[in-house]
Length: 278
Image (tube, rainbow, N blue to C red; front, side):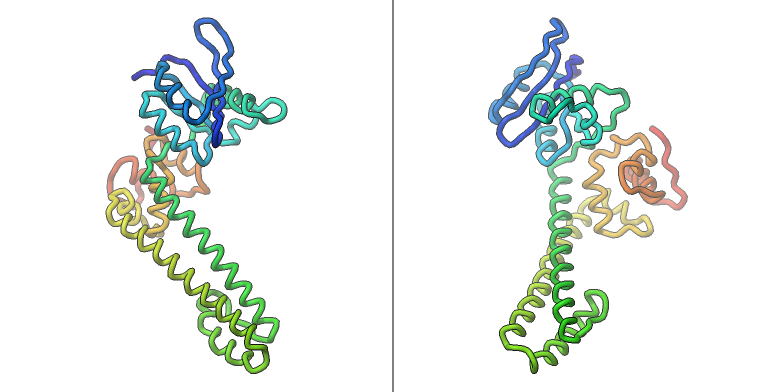
């Protein structure tokens, strides 16, 4: 279905959605407020149109649903929308800002991801959260031990080697309740190791079943974590016209351009592969 040319700006929220558009026939400006339950019903009963939304937590879901209804959703990065917010932020002004931003020539959009890709990104976020918590626990434990003259070697492996002997030495001087608390904190680190390992095993299983992820992993310097994250974050490789454009959307490098070429052209990695504009 081809879009009629009507552009709708949408500000999404948990319960109430704000829509903004200009009627092409009459020039009437429409500000429409819809509840969450009426949002899809509204778009199911109107001609296909371009829908501009700011990329946020729930926007991927709504973009997929709008695409199923024959519309053309476009997700905009916040930095592309912010200059068009006039005055203090509210739902109506945000919807109008989305409407204005999506009509700008050459505006960059965020790739719409499948539910499977979002699920893999969710695993990566959960793993990242656990890694941060594990690091905080280790650093806290290292600091507490240092207060009693026990300095652990750097890195997780260093404290793993020395924690047992350190606790044994200070147990002769400190109350038992403190030693028990320190042992419990180290036990939490061990449990976090197990949880992180469980997520990594799930990512590895998905990696083995996904041809695109396996192709990326053939690029030197790319492992399972990077391959799965890139495939999930990129969405449709066709969204980017070249490897240079994909690299610009990330903290990119020549490796990012190579990864795009492998995915966009659906071929195996070859040394000196060069990405060409579409």
